[in-house]
Length: 160
Image (cartoon, rainbow, N blue to C red; front, side, top):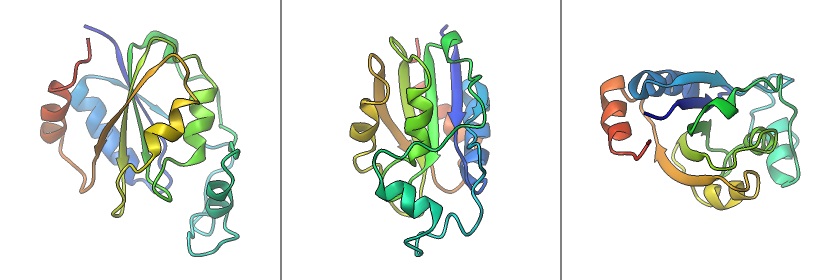
């Protein structure tokens, strides 16, 4: 059986709770993608065009710094990457994370939480950040799915 990692970014805790359940369901290890400068409530105010998240998402070259560069990605074959959907795509810190490591030959399965958006162009937007990896659209996981629900989903994925 291949080794699996659940790596996630969570600004408000919603994605973190889902990631923890997913890691338990998949028998995977867990890694938090943390920004060097944590996001405040004001930073996340999408209605303010000058808020940090708005500025980052409006600049496709934005790459917020990571708090650390010690994700053990080399040890894993399959990596779930989770995040909240911002402006119909992944937050740019996910690009930072994917560009910080070599994901060649690895399978990346995306999962996200969202207030109502789908994945949009997320896969397309992230492919250039992880050359040599297979990146697939996984699932939007809203409503705090249980470990049992997530286990059903992960059992249907080819993680070998």
